[in-house]
Amino acid sequence: MTNRVAIITGAARGIGLACVRRFLNDGYNVVIADSDEAAAHDAMRSFDLGDERVIAVHCDVSDKLAIHNLIAETLSAFGQIDVLINNAAIIKQGGALDLSIEDFDAVLAVNLRGAFLAAKGVASYMADYLRNDDDRSGAGGANFSIINMSSINDKLALSDYLAYVVSKGGLSQLTKAMSLELASLGIRVNSISPGSVKTDMFSKVAGDDEAVAAVNSFTPLGRIAHPDEIAGVAAFLAGPDASYVTGETIYVDGGRSALNYMMPDKS
Ligand SMILES: NC(=O)c1ccc[n+]([C@@H]2O[C@H](COP(=O)([O-])OP(=O)(O)OC[C@H]3O[C@@H](n4cnc5c(N)ncnc54)[C@H](O)[C@@H]3O)[C@@H](O)[C@H]2O)c1
Image (cartoon, rainbow, N blue to C red; front, side, top):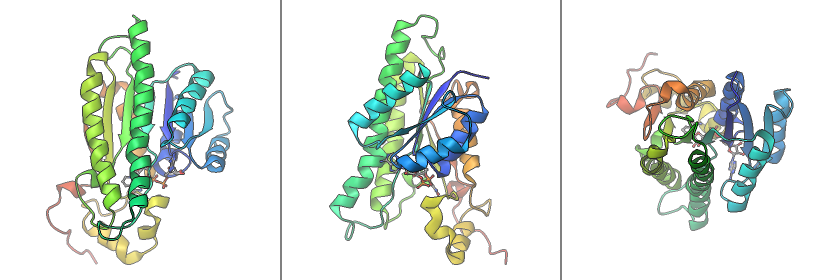
């Protein structure tokens, strides 16, 4: 049992919710932060653990005041923050010719500005804490960890999801730049880049057999990931086994980014 505390954004469903489940099982106290207030509270109640282990905070990550409030509510409930998972994201279809400027701004506001605001706020708390606490300061002392949920689309582009791929490319650079800045304090910053994962975000494809077959054809493991398979990597990056890992992006994509040709048709 640990008394470590994790804030997970976009945690009311999907990969975020799988991370909540995994971190609670691993003994963390967890903050479910989501812009969908009702879903966040439903998620919290589904664990039946009481507010000593898990709380829900209504938070739109693109809003500076909401991030300020998220950090304040976390500290008021649990007294510390050890891990931040920047997982909240939205996706809008459209390429350079047809994507509206409003949709471009909306995606960047949540996926990139939101991750920056939360990482900046939590890193400031962590840095202040380390400067004032001799016991936990120095490399590795506190094992503070910031994890950005990026995407294989941080390096593989999709022309019809321009804003999303731009946001994820930026998120990977946010990871690297912050990891360099915070390394001397022992705060680690890493990314996870999933391929295709069975969640609401992926539901458009999941309901279409042909589209699923197409995804499988360029996924060497030949299937779509379960959200728990992403949560396991987040647990690794948050924990002591990753104490020497920072500035890294782990591709959890069933081998897709290693592939230079289509997998043979097995049917
Ligand atoms: N599902 C996939 O195939 C896949 C693949 C690669 C990367 N990812 C990434 O994993 C993460 C989680 O994806 P998912 O599939 O679980 O998504 P999802 O759509 O199932 O869940 C996203 C959650 O984020 C919340 N959210 C949206 N806007 C928010 C905001 N402004 N503030 C706070 N919360 C907000 C939603 O309410 C929702 O609960 C995202 O960063 C996504 O880009 C997913």
